[in-house]
Length: 192
Image (cartoon, rainbow, N blue to C red; front, side, top):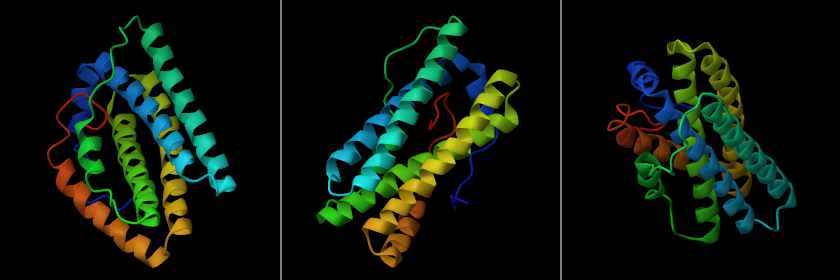
């Protein structure tokens, strides 16, 4: 579905499961950052009320996910740590075109789509490989949500830009992400 060039090694789930407290804290902060990103996009698109409405729904859903992860952390008696630096996301951000307003907005949509695609793929790996039944079910639900967000962001990019140009740019994003992700998959973080 996403055409990701390099799948996550299923052994990453073993790394994540060895430190569920850390993966949950990192995941919670990823959800908070996703909500913040959607709100940032809203500020760039006030002339598109239908897109603003959808982005607002995504921001609210991401905050709901943040809350759900936070509740799991509390229920399990884990410590909720400070925000984590996400090197993967920071490296992806370097690929955003700083050209025209249209190019910038389209690329920010593709940036968001890429993060959602990789997150969905990671949640699928967790669902298929961890032993914790509660988290298996939880990540399966989130996997579906992330796939919907991916579809929404790709759709917005095609709506706001030339669809053929957007498709070529998405292919470039896929290549760029494949080179980045080679260095990841060895830490107990969602993108690490």
